[in-house]
Image (cartoon, one colour):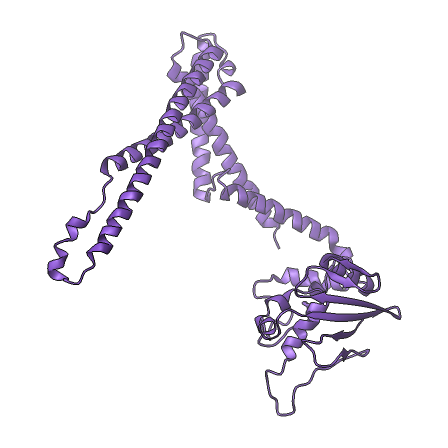
Amino acid sequence: MLKSIESDVLIKNKIIFEDGLNVVLGENNGKNSIGKSSFLVVIDYAFGGESLKKYSEIIKNVGDFSLSIEFVFNDMSHYFVRSTSSDKIKYINDKRDISLDEYKRLLAYYYKFPTLITTYRSLVSIVTRIWNVGINLPNDPLKINQNIRYDTIVQNLLDLFCFSGGISDYYSKLKENEFNVKLIKDSYKYEFVKKVSKRDYKNNELKLYELKLENKHIEDTLNAQLLNSSNLINDVVLNLKKDKDKLSDELNYIDNKIYRIENNLSKTSYIKSKNFKSLVDFFPDINMSKIEEVESFHKGISTILKKELVIELEHLKENSIKFKTDINNVDINIANLIKFPNICQSIIYKLLDNTNIISSLSKENEYFDRSIKLNKKKI
């Protein structure tokens, strides 16, 4: 147990804690601002908390300080000194400095914290509140903060009293389900898969039916010419078509940037001070030298920006040429892989496009189905 705390700067007299309940009382007249809340923050600091460093009133009034701490475990005293000016804690018994994490682990070991409770803060925050400091929810006494979920509150209590073993498998499955839900949400968030509504889902089903029907018609046409359509839509060819689409998107993006930069360069200008001279007629006290300074500044910035834009433009044009070359090479590779000179290339590309769209729409609907299934498992 915590036996005593002492600080020449912070505490007038050494504070000794007795077995059982210890009470901190204010004056009989009910006077506030005597340090009760600050004292609780100091106790938190003794147990490895960090709130005191953020508690501006204490640091503001006394500056950095050291706190001597005594714990008694199994009738043996353990002495520590923790200072706000150092990340290390002096372990007097072992005559060495230890990290804050080691300090917390040491206390957790001696206090025999439940396996799933690893810090003093996580242990006492379940049942400790300081009125008018932090959250005040009299009707929700077990809420650590405003946004905490009730299943988390229940889990904390079960962990505290070591009753969570019987439902650990259930919570493991629940956590796994939440993880899978998060994966799907992240897939939508980072646009790995497009998120669809129920209406979109039905439209996708219809579109998939139409595309598969269209592909079947193309395949029948190709088969009528004694060609095997699987040669046209193998993975290598499909990936090449996807590469071409990506390269085309990049080329369009670069060409648009080139257009904007060329347009900006052709219109780059700045307002000259001579255009402001008529202001003297209306404002005789106007400072024309300041305006001239502004004009000089604008000239300098304009020159720098123009140079940067010209360099960027040259770089973009080089990339544009490179992308056009890459697209041409992809077209050559596709033609070499297919090697069906009698087939119109547009038919082949149509088959490839349809196959890629089918894959994309199928993935959208698959994620929609998985999302519905996982949400049904939520509690």
